[in-house]
Length: 410
Image (cartoon, rainbow, N blue to C red; front, top):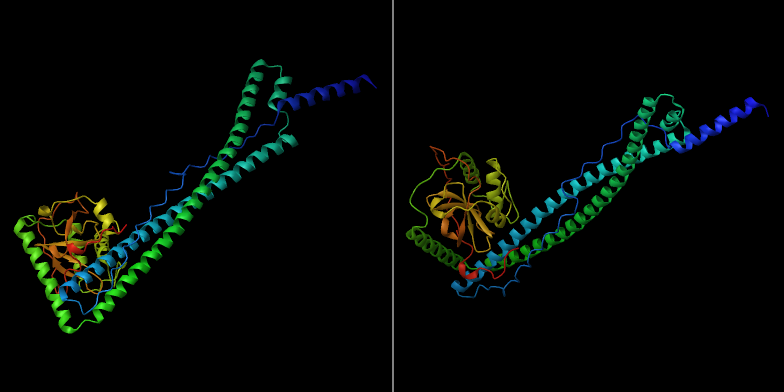
C-alpha cells in the first residue's frame, strides 16, 4: 500500500471518529411554539343533581269543599313550578356543559397539532443526523480549526444546537401530556353532559305529570266551583296586599327606573296576555323566569335563566327601595319571580293555565327582591308604558304559604 493511500485512510478514519462524537448536525429552522395551555385542564366537576321533586299528593277531587280544593290545587301549582324551574336549571347547566366540551375539544385539537409539529421537527433532526446533509458538525469544525476564537464560536454554536434539540424533545413530551389531559377532561365533560340530559328528561316528565293532574281537576269543576275558587284566591291576594302596604315595608317614595330597567319593563308589558308555558322563554309564551330573563336580555343585560339563580347571583335590594325593572322573588326556595312595575304591582307569568299579567306584589309569599343593574342611574323622567286593556284580569296567585313544599326545587 502506498504512503499516500495510507495517509488518506488515516485522515478518513479521524474524520469519521470526529463526526460520530459530534452528534446531530445543526438545524437552522425555528422550532414550533409550545401549545398554549387552556385556562383549566381538569374536567369541571359535575353539578349536583337536583333533588327529586316531591311526589304528588293524593289527587284532588271536585267533590271536596272549595277551601280544601283550593289549597290542594295551589300545592299542585307550586310543585309544577318547582319542576319547571328544575328543568330550566338542568337545561342551562347542560348548555354550559356543551360549551365547555366544545372548548376542550378545540384545545385538544391544538395540542395534537403541536404534537404533530414537534414529531416532525424531531424526525427532521434525526434524518439530518443520519444523512449528514449539513456537512461538518460544529465539533468537527472545532477539531480542524486553526483559529482559537473560531473554535470557541463553533463550540457556542454546538451548544446552541444541542439545546435546540433538547427543547424539541421536551416540547414533544409536554405536548403529548397536555393532549392526554385534555382528552380525559373532554371525556369527563361528555359523561357529565349525558347525566344532565337524563336529569332534564326526568324533570320534564315530572312537570308534565303535575300539569296533567291540575288539568284533570280543573276540567271536572262546575262553573260555580270555578267562580268560588276565583273569589277565594282574589280574597287571599287582596288580604296579603293590604297587610304588606299597611306594614310600610314597601315605602312611600316613587322611583324611576334606569334606562335598562325601563326597557325591560316595556318589553314585559308587551308580553301581557301571552300564556304561561313551563320552560318557555318567548316569544309566544313564557314561564316566570323566562319572562324576567328575556325582559332584561332585551334591555341589553344577560341575567341568569332561573329564578333561583336570579335570587342567588343578583344584588339584593330592600323592598322599600324598589324601582321599576327590579325583580321580585317568591317562596323560601325562590321558585317564582316577577318584574316590578311600580305602585306595589308586578308583571308576572303566574302559573300553568294563566297568562302574563299585572298582579299585586303580594300575590305570592315574598322572599325578597334583586336588581339586575345596581350601578345604573335612575332616569330623571320616565313615562311608564301604557298597559293593555285587561292587563290585571285573571288569577293572581297560584300558591299559598300553607302549601309551600318541604323540599327545594334543586
